[in-house]
Length: 268
Image (tube, rainbow, N blue to C red; front, side, top):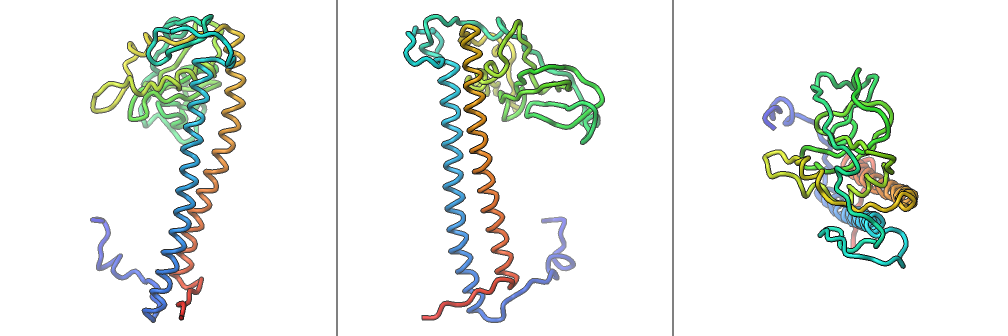
């Protein structure tokens, strides 16, 4: 690192060194084996998280595109990403059921760590400010960056920046149902190819979506909220397990290389 001087900083930093090579080797061998075992467990936990996320996506996609009744008759939707949908469902464009509009410009100097109103950008909460642009329970779509097209929910009174697209329903729309439908559409695939990826709102507004009757939208929303709550709880437990394993790995290394945990050479 160019800002660190070897002679006056790093080079004179004191480190503990076991006097015998055999003890050094014993510590290295022990840590290699222990860390390998911990890393393997973390990798398995991460694989489980990936499978959990894939399952979540499949459940959401199935519910918002096929409904909850597995015995219902289907028809060809005429939309590539949808394929078959229940025969009594309609096909609408996004702009037929909601207005999509970017938030307002806000400089980084106007965003503070504390303040009266939360500020939401394309990737969620950014900080706080003293003014607001919107209120109520809404879906936000990330507009800029590698994560453009991601979905967040906001409620209350807040400031939405120009990097967030606020979805305002035309009528009594089920917000969570609509947000999960948008999530299932993988809107990131519609980003432009500019240096900084971004969504073309004109294209997004004209995308076709399935529209179930009101009672089915309510049922789908209730079902998905319950499923997502359970999956989020499981995800949180697994993430905490991974965090605990990583912390244990770090503490084990520290204890061994500083002599707090003695490691002895195995003799045969």
